[in-house]
Image (cartoon, rainbow, N blue to C red; front, side):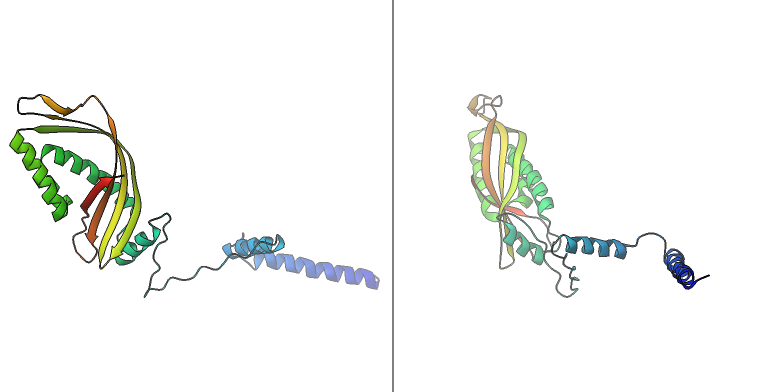
Length: 218
């Protein structure tokens, strides 16, 4: 056997030894680290920037969640002060509150309105209900659907959180006098009502309920 054959077989032996180590000396299959390394190599070859490494969150100062839209800054401030605050959950709850308040106001149900209104709004609603009662009038309101319930503004001032929600709803309503005659409205006619409702809550309070603080046309 000449020197070239000896070198060839020696090189082949080394190559096979390396292959055997690759197959037997390491865990089978591609690991997560292998996958991430290959992704970085492909990104570098394509000229793409390397993916930034995630920064570990600090237990002492957890980062506030990021929100989008015009109310983002206020929502972030509220979420930082109230760890249980969730904008999606709030919007869903606001939609339910809208239907409850509209219905309770039409029925003149003060007990149902009590935990849902701030003192100022409660005083205004109570006065309007009292005027209807004095005149012997009854109101029937039917909400066909709430088309929109969107957070449009949020703020936090001195632990007082405020969130404004834009509502758009299809509503039919009518008012009848003491003899049952219609004096205004028509239950057979739907109208689109667009309003901005403001809800408030003291984030330091143990009471998780938000209360309606104001209503204005959109």
